Image: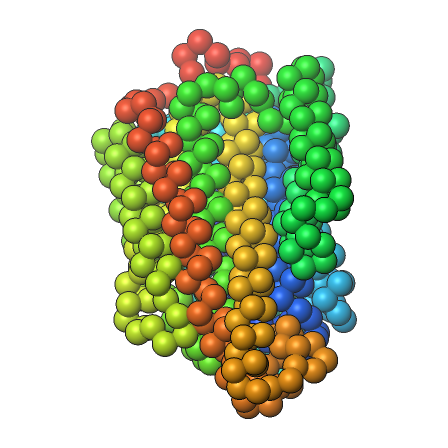
Length: 508
């Protein structure tokens, strides 16, 4: 494809990615209001986010593998339709159970769009040139993340719209993206009729991860850390994942190719992506809750207050992407990004319900810069060492582990936050001489609480948030170590590896 053709197709791809990214961020600021309106709890708050991340995580390697076997254009159009229909369903949800279920379906579309956009771009552009286009990718992700909270807050605060339009608004974007890709996208499809999709491996991976995440959510509240429920769920989850590894090592077309994962640079890139995803998703998803519940700001104000985080992603991803394409070197930017990310989370770890907003904004800016410099460049590390025929599986693998990190991060940090908040509320009520009734302060509908109880709940949320960012900093530090051990390789100029070119291919 010529540069003009690439840009035309890229417009549709980036719009599809924009839709997927904004679906998560547009809800982030409005979630406290959404869960409050549906009379949900902190655990349900976490699972509205976790359900979509889990579905995206479980389906990502499958979509990546399908991209190696079938038409990439048809697959991305199917994923757009899935995403559009599930967004409509989320908007019509009548309770938190329905919302969580529809968000899981929406996650299937989100996972597909995130990996397929990267696979298609990689099928059109060489790794060295891809750094610049990945900069565009990071910029779009940043714009979606910036616009999402602002738009979500504005919609939630507008009486004649309401929070349901946080989901409905995705529909026109998906229609336009579908039409653009139908007209402009023309990519190579390698026909391999003998290939099969490893559904057994994908199912086992999804089941094992789900069991462990469910255990993380309920341990310490519904049952003790040392109990038969813990033994059954942890033991069962580990056994299922062990079976998944066994299946992946024996099937001809594994959904997560172990021969790629076992190699040094891909393994380190995956470990770093796991850490970045866990820290980024797990930490940032609770910022909207911190500003609204812990600090008392409205949805629109909370969206405005998250701008430093997104501005950091926008600037660093664009600049680092351009510099990577010029130099062909990617490791220095990954290492620097991981270090800055860790420092940013260390800054956020000391915040409470009275911390200066200037300090909070500076720490968020550092977190955004770290994410922008490291996240997309880690994808390049793996894409640089695999042939074109394995591009989908390799991209799916690193996106899978990054999403897995995000899912684990949200679940673990959500469980930590819920426990810290429960303790803080109990202590606050005891000091204030308040006898908890009904939900005991576990509800996120603060308007239903008396003023004295509302003050205690706000302080508990504000003070507990710093603890989860301290955990995020420790996780991000693992990414620093992994990045330091990456080999300082130069990105290749060719679209495919020289000895693995496939000549018998068709164009959609």
